[in-house]
Length: 487
Ligand SMILES: Cc1ncc(COP(=O)(O)O)c(C=O)c1O
Image (cartoon, rainbow, N blue to C red; front, side, top):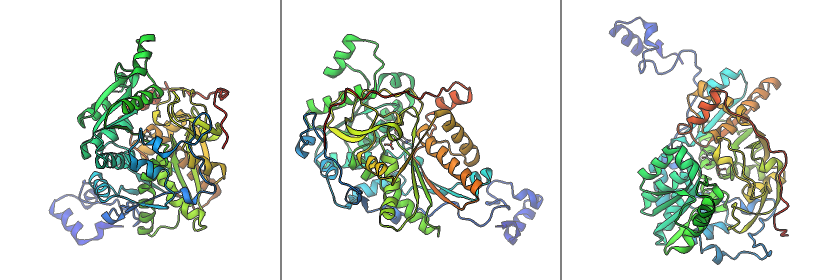
């Protein structure tokens, strides 16, 4: 589009008494460089794009989900889950309804925090790679805490408030999930206590500060506030903490305090469900752009919530024979649950306090190497995603952290957006797909979920740029201690 040809621009150039060509480069004067085609870079973001229903993939799965079990093999009853979770969450957790209404207050809060999020074409990246592929990303980084986690935090804090629950407890590693729940607690008047892994509490203070701004109580874990924490500190006063210990503390806290429940930021069906606003919006936005159906959909996987939220609405179309896209789930080689884990019953946490769930797992005692993508350092993956991987509907791939940071650097230089280290995994897969398209001279429409920005994760980038990052790939995984549970 050549806006300079318009009389307005010429007038502006003359009126300001600057040569016409310079008017191009005056910020705000010429809003599109001359060389660009009249392509649409950003999809519309009208309010009605925000979905009124969450999509539940459970009735569409190629096989039923296996129920949560106890170590003796018996099935965990929904009432037992209500000891730690809000009733409505348990209802959603076991629901087989395909669509579940988003409560109006939740939808309103989604609008207030920035939904619908942008769907942006990565035009400059396409040019740099010289690929015939079109690349789009759904940018969840606009939400106030910088990542997709707010989508479920808002739903969970809302249901807690409606049930008269006064306090929610949770764990957090580097703080992405903790900050999202703290925000949601502030919005709905629910107190939040976050058990933050001690080493992160001390070394990564900024998300702690963010949680405190929202009014949450942030406790370094292990702490003296719980039996589990006190026991660990007695034996080892300098224990740096782990996600497993923090989960145990948060659950114990919920079980031993009145009007308190526990909140989890991934893995559960209900959490994946809440995230489906991402994919539903993206689908509508592609349509509004007049774009053809995507050929490739990509997301990173920790417990699976942003990946599921983005891809499941598209997978529904694929399962109905209406979309022929490759769906790619990206994980770190340091914690490769989908590519190298076993599909069997395991605990969701390191301490073994949760029910057993059937999933791809590396074993709950596995402590992933300390890669910067803290949100991907998880031993298992959501049960529904495990089934989709088993059936070849989702293709898992794994990358090393140095190649992932390099991909994110390329993306940032082309597009300006700095990816969270977790998101950078998806970016790497997208670049590989685009380069493959170039080699094969193939038209592709690649859409990926940009789950969060990395502006509070610059330490990882600093280490990468200084050449200090190491790639660790565990040689083997010991699962011999896992309970043998059939079903
Ligand atoms: C930005 C970002 N992306 C991805 C993840 C991975 O989590 P999940 O697989 O539940 O989306 C996290 C987890 O903290 C995250 O913060």
